[in-house]
Image 1 (tube, rainbow, N blue to C red):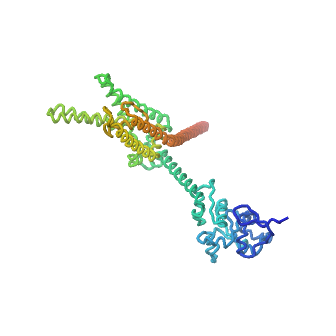
Image 2 (spheres, rainbow, N blue to C red):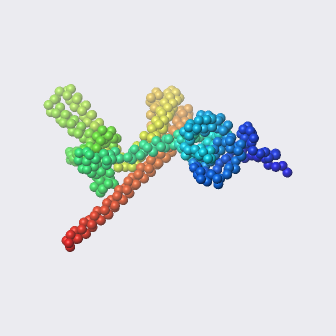
Image 3 (tube, rainbow, N blue to C red):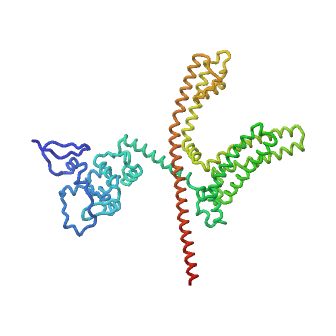
Length: 507
């Protein structure tokens, strides 16, 4: 019966068959037979400065082996690494500790040192140091998927080990995971900035009429702060809808009569007065005026009220020109003013964007577009390439057909755009077999193209919407809880005042 020999220094748990050999007698033999990981070299930390119990502890390691090993304690876990193995990597922290002869330099490399046990202590993560320990033994840095990339990079930078020592496959997967984590953290910070209120309560401290301005700001910007704030938020959304409906009805022929036109003008005036009052309240109550002007929602509010006042100004100029200047060139300028006036009236459609202030879905949609602008631009680029490519192909196979609508490539752009979008109006169709084959290719390409970004955009929109909604619910619950606490405080305070008043009366 052959006796099992000592375990080889290998990554695999293999056994060497042969005569059992004793402890390593030379550094070369010790390097060959040094175990990869076992209890004798990886043991729990007991004490670092317990000198009083020195007589009770006896070393079980052979004297020769202890002189060849570097005793390291990481977070309460003890490791033993041969000096020769550590010296292979002199730029690392353990390598510097192995080759250094100056005791002061060694103390700077570690957090503490036990003279009795000849052990260097490091206050680091012992779980990750297992991979560092394996690196010194095998020369390969292993990376597990369950490790946190940020923590792992921080640890290996502390130990002075570069990521290039890891396997290429592991390094690629680790870098991809690291990039995903950085992107996720970036989006999280931007989402928190989106949810963060523009003004904080401490910004009003020390300002002129600080308490009054803070109360007005909470009334306008925080719908969940009080019942009047909710009423104002509902009124704001209601006036936006009324304004859009009024602008739509003003284009109806029956509403352009004298009675209907006067009613629409009065409705527009009421909406404009409300929007102006709302904007002025925000402007007066803001604590940081430059930040207020840079905010996107405030720019939308300004665009919502400017067309009304510009329209009044242009109508006044129009009437003045019509009364006092009857020359031909003046009448032409009046016509130009009328076209500009129609364009200004059309700008009122941007008032619907005011709903984004109180709509979680619209805010999530805008945030999704900002985060996915690269995918959207890529989609538009593919659409443009498809339009130019298939319009050129269609013109090349259809331009000789009598009575064809594909007389030029620009004339075929509309057909290509409609076919790529899979709408297919049918106003322009090919007549030849080759033309129909090109049309089939265009429609197939459009189906594939439209299906690619939908899942990406929808998943991100769903994620952002859920986070925004969760933040709103959390804010609402916090305010309600604060109100309940304040109600109890006021009730107890009132009760205490009543009791003190009764005591004074009886006294």
